[in-house]
Length: 157
Image: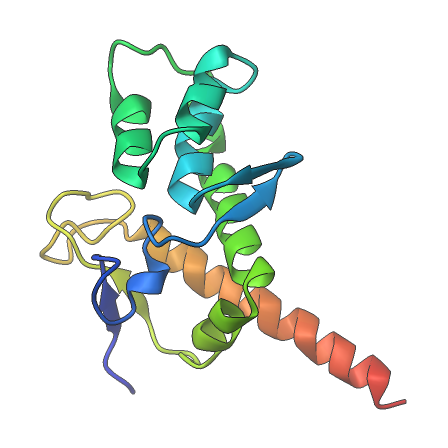
């Protein structure tokens, strides 16, 4: 079995997996500068704060607004956050053909967001975290592969 692919910083190998990578996504009729912008903004759906996050100059600024405990978030956030992340990742990896190819090129290798800063989306730095970002990326990879196989199968008839 291949070694897992560890990622975190957008300026390092496999940095395109980071939500801070500069790949805009088009969702909800708007362009979001990064998947991080979209994800953080959905904490404030339907409020002016949603647009504030979208217009943040950098993904770190979007994350700061989204994580600020003084900004009340939607009451169902914990129930929907994985679906919101899935939506953002699917958009990112289907709207950028170069990223689609890079994601599929990882074959079936385990993807791990390696960071001590996050035990939910990442591995907690020591493998004790849930690695939800890595798991969702692998899910998206399988979904895209299945969708492309369907297209190739239909075209070959």
